[in-house]
Length: 438
Image (cartoon, rainbow, N blue to C red; front, side):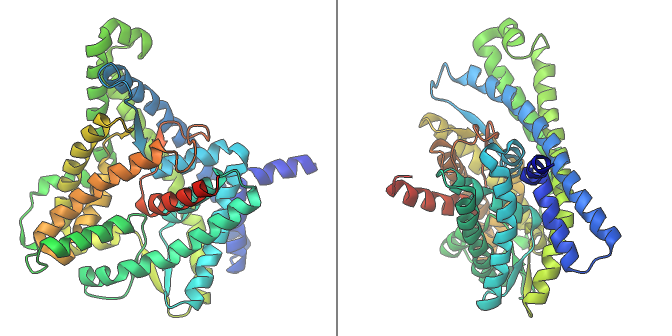
């Protein structure tokens, strides 16, 4: 019986269920709500795992197509997908060396430290973007785990870094948020903060906030990309078909069908690998939403009682209504930034993150809004461009030098981190660890 209990408690889904249970009990919820919230949390993790299997299953053939098509030209070419939820979900699901449990406990203790810091420091923000709470807990736990630390020290150090991050990040973004919104009612809570602030700094150097992009008329047709299912499908179909064409050009149709598609035509195979990828992402995100939908209210209820006068720090879409033109300009600038960075990375022999419309829209869009707040139209385009151009080099650096360890060995094959708020601190901590021989 004891062995069964130990095995259950070691499972990430159960650990997160326990966290939700504790939070709901602490809020004095009724028994029905406690049972419902706990079960839905566990189910959310299991659904997320199904999505991860779909994403990885679709990624591997697409990678193979690119490697078959480009390696003869560039022998060191290596492609991967940059997808934070994918990395953390895959690692948590595989649970190599109890890393899944470490992620779950870091999520809990990191948030407790965040609440304590928000209570005793002037930074009165409560970080409430659920998937980012999970992603950063995962990133920092994976980082410290990669140094060969025990479960205790992995959770302890990762929780401290995570708690400091969630407390400080909204505070340093707030001066620009006030410019964007004209108010001080809420903060910004997303892993793209550092590159957004870079965008705001560049915008201030090159532009004029009075020459705002919001005076421009932008074609409504570009709003098409706001639907995540459509935007991911479109870009992945393009990416997959391009990879298939490159592979066919190098090895021929017959070899493609024999080595890659298992007898299926190259066009149909490439098309449906892209759609399988999108389907996997949507299943994964549904699981994340279910998981976060139960855990975040528990954190929020406790935090608001402990930090009187705190402001909520919210997800990136909260700033979109304040600068819709800048958002679309950022999409364009981010796409350009990616397609300039990608060939440069390939030529210098660094791993290449495949194009991402998620980053171009949500990240470069926000970067453009920050840039517009300080530099108008010029700042908006520069902010969108810079986010993806600089971001792709950061993403590639972290993947090439295994800043977060060997992610493939941890279950995240062909996946890398995107958010700079995890990558940049991760690089500094990784460099320090290298100095001490870790």
